[in-house]
Length: 206
Ligand SMILES: [Zn+2]
Image (cartoon, rainbow, N blue to C red; front, side, top):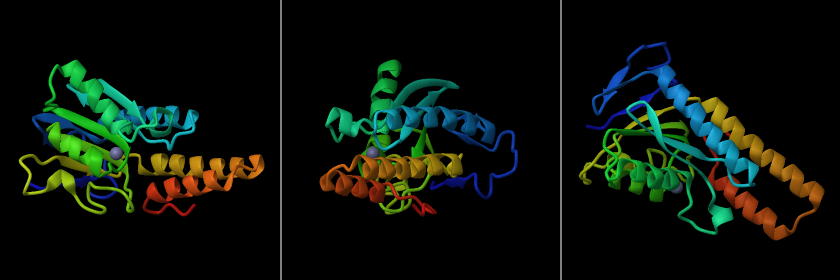
C-alpha cells in the first residue's frame, strides 16, 4: 500500500497518535523530536565543510544509528548520511534487516540511499525537505514505494521542513561568501555550485 503523509498539510494539527507504522504508534511531536536529532547531525557535516545532511534511525523509541554527510572528507560516494546510519543501526540490530525502524533525514534521499532503505526493509522514512533535483522518495522517482519491489516504505514529509531547508540554504550562502572573500579557485566554485544545485530544495531560492 502506497502511503505518503505530510506534516505540512494533513498532519499539521497536534494529533497525539496520527498513524501506525509497523505496529509503532507515531505522532508529530515524536517526529519533530527525532528530526531535531537529524538536524544536529547535519550541523556536524556543516562544521567540516560538507553539504549539511543528517540522519538518525530509531527503533522502539531509541536512536540506534546516526550519520551525517562525509562524502568529501572520506573521498567516498558511499559516505552519505543515510548509509552511515544504516551501517550503525545494522550493527546494533545484529541484522541487515531494519524492520520496525524509522529513518529521520533532513533531505529527501538520493537513488543510492533510497535503494539501501528498501533493501534494509525499513518501515518508515520521515523527510524534512524535498529535493526536486536529486530526491528519489517522490521528487524524481519514488523508489521507496515501487509496486515492483518486494518491500515498500511508508513516507512522511515536511517535518521541520523550514528549519532544515533554511539551514541548508544558509550553508551555501555562507560558503559562497567565504569563497568570494578567500578568492578560492574557479574549480572549487564550480564544484560548490554543482553541489548546491544537486541539493536544491523546493522553495530554496538561494
Ligand atoms: Zn544518498
